[in-house]
Length: 376
Ligand SMILES: Cc1cc2nc3c(=O)[nH]c(=O)nc-3n(C[C@H](O)[C@H](O)[C@H](O)COP(=O)(O)OP(=O)(O)OC[C@H]3O[C@@H](n4cnc5c(N)ncnc54)[C@H](O)[C@@H]3O)c2cc1C
Image 1: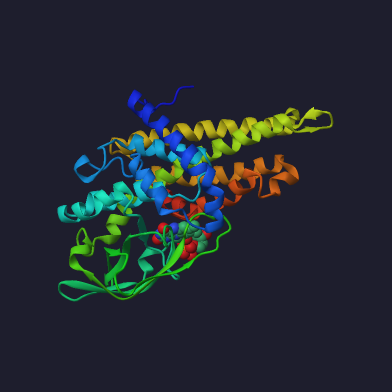
Image 2: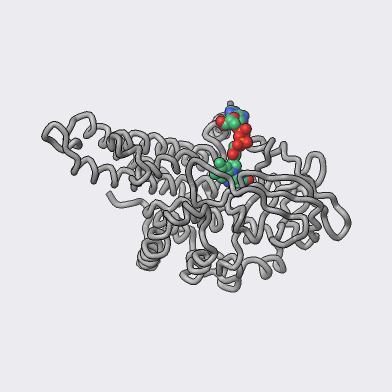
């Protein structure tokens, strides 16, 4: 069945280039990055040179003025090689839009070209030790001192936390108002804490961040003071769709490697894939994945024409990530003991899949949002 998204020849050429990049520059090095718990800056620069960072930025700011399908292609080709450490989508689809949409012209000139070249690596710092799902509960404060803010607080679980040169930081600017400020690497008082030890995403430098009397000039306020929460809510739909697209492709990869294995592995004188239980399970999973892809493709088209509803993005996110988690678990079972060995990619896929239903809004929060849209 053809996909409902009509990719042009240009999109297909871009896909081919992206595919080669991930095969040559990511796949062979991923295992080493997992040992290092970080991806080299050099790889970010190479991605920038290949037009894989912020392709949707206007040309005057270093991008190619591309449509979201180019971003979607990057997400898909990245997932196809099992990449779980080099967070291009976080940079491209989740954080950069805050700059391209809410920053003023001077800020755009200052930050966007570096984001597109890989000289800047982005992070977004919302979560705190005592506030994750309940974002309004953050305690990091930015005290208004006229021409600058003084920022104090602590963030945790921040992706790209060690590498980031620009950190969009959610701060309280009054008891009931949140703002977004750009904290830059090297600002006195801004310090990186531990690169956290996780069960998966081993190549990701997910970290704690500390802010002690950090002087942030007013020129680094993103958008209007007090509008931070609204900006975050507006942009989360794109973030959730990006996550959903990655989940679909990661599930496809898991099914592909499992199919290969169950066609080769023999038991009781037969390919294990010929046992009815395994055959039916694979058939069910292939069906569910195909249907989920159609929904996510439809959501992608809706995002592009500006009609994607928050609840629809939440549906795409919770369903596809829960599917990825469930399928990866079921597929691992078909590898028997080998599925439990880290040298088998299915084991890593299992560990990497677990976080998908937690970050970028948990499954429960997605269902809350959908429930609210139903008037409940
Ligand atoms: C690897 C990784 C990378 C991350 N990257 C980033 C990042 O770059 N930037 C960033 O800001 N954050 C990041 N996070 C944080 C992530 O977004 C939060 O962990 C997530 O939002 C959940 O918040 P929490 O951990 O505080 O859990 P809690 O909010 O404490 O939730 C605990 C449990 O309670 C449930 N729950 C909470 N509220 C409700 C409710 N109203 N109804 C029903 N159930 C509810 C949750 O669904 C969950 O099951 C990352 C997390 C991880 C693990």
